[in-house]
Image 1 (cartoon, rainbow, N blue to C red):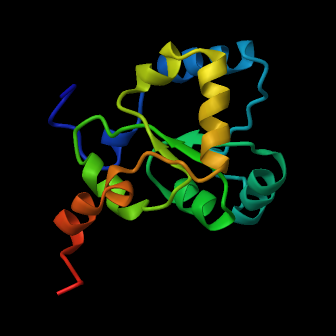
Image 2 (image 1 turned 120 degrees about the horizontal axis):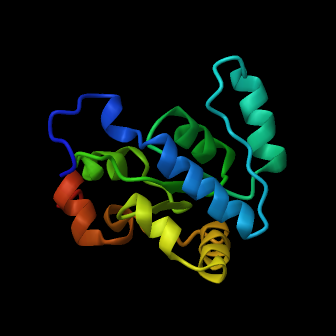
Length: 146
């Protein structure tokens, strides 16, 4: 754990340097980047941008992730910096989310693997182990077949 004293919401954010490296990588792969973290952009504007311009959205657990689920847009989610990833998986139980194991995981994959991941997400092959594993579902929600 990087810094166990981090509190909400700081524990889900990464440094500007890490985001810069990510932007450089994604631009190098030939993708355009739209940032949605500007408070002056309204929810309606964010919805419009996501629906019309985003092949996939990358970010942390939060409102934009929920909006992407509603809009059926693939989402690649950073892990929280201090655990609680099972909570994120519980509140994002959809088949178009890819949960990263680390921030660096996204920087270490190839353009080909990134593109294939986005395509798999469009096809509904996310990696939420709770959603994809009946035993995981029972662990979190109980067995309703009794």
